[in-house]
Amino acid sequence: MAAPILDAFQVIADPSRRQMLVMLSKKSMTINALAENFDMSRPAVSKHVKIMYHAGFISITDIGRERYCTLKQDGFNKVQDFIDYFDKFWTGKLKKLETLLNMKAQ
Amino acid sequence: MAAPILDAFQVIADPSRRQMLVMLSKKSMTINALAENFDMSRPAVSKHVKIMYHAGFISITDIGRERYCTLKQDGFNKVQDFIDYFDKFWTGKLKKLETLLNMKAQ
DNA sequence: AATTTGCGTAACCAAAAAGTTACCTATAAG
DNA sequence: CTTATAGGTAACTTTTTGGTTACGCAAATT
Image 1 (tube, rainbow over the protein chains, first blue to last red):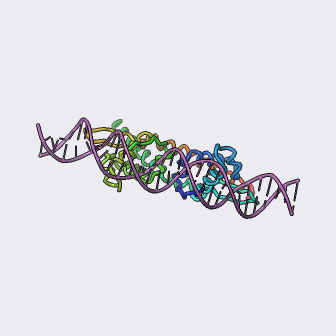
Image 2: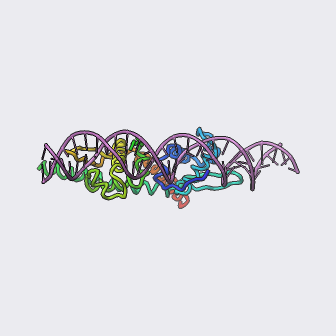
Image 3: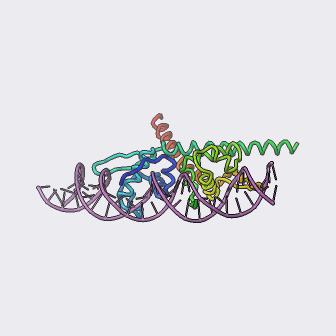
């Protein structure tokens, strides 16, 4: 399973990975614990984990033979920055509309 | 160019599409106007536009033989909802930490 | 009326992503 | 010390994505 290195946007493009992130927001989980919740093999989950790790969405802690995945903020920030840009665009548009309406009201 | 129907997350997974969205935040543009800014053929741009349209990121207005693309909020909202969920998760974590620190301070 | 321009569509191709099975290693448990 | 368990890695397959060229059509232009 050669796991490609994907960026933050590509990470959340996959529904399974999004679901894994939601699950990890509830509690840290091992590879097998994650795999139990998906209709895919453990190596497949392992690959997704590696992808999410490289993009900064999770951190990994090995405890004995178990590998715990924990949510990490870094990956999300990159997506949020992009969304924020457009959020400002829309609120800016809204402000222009308000100004226009206020002018007409006078 | 059979354009697949992709969801909001898949739309922003592509760097070219993200760039197109940023450009459209500055002004509405036609297919050719967009294509001039990319190292790809017009049909390729046309396909991206269709994908972004179907996922609710842009609206399309035909004026004569020209097709104007204008930014639309719907697509962004779906991504924002996802990001908001985790944003609440992090601020929740932060609050717990604050509470803990306050308790120790007393 | 003839030509140019803007854009869509079809058929096709190459690269990448997402999955599989088979096999190996290391830790934990009996 | 033997066995079971947790998980990584390799090799391979299928599907999807992102791109191309070739062509057609309708709206402008001349």
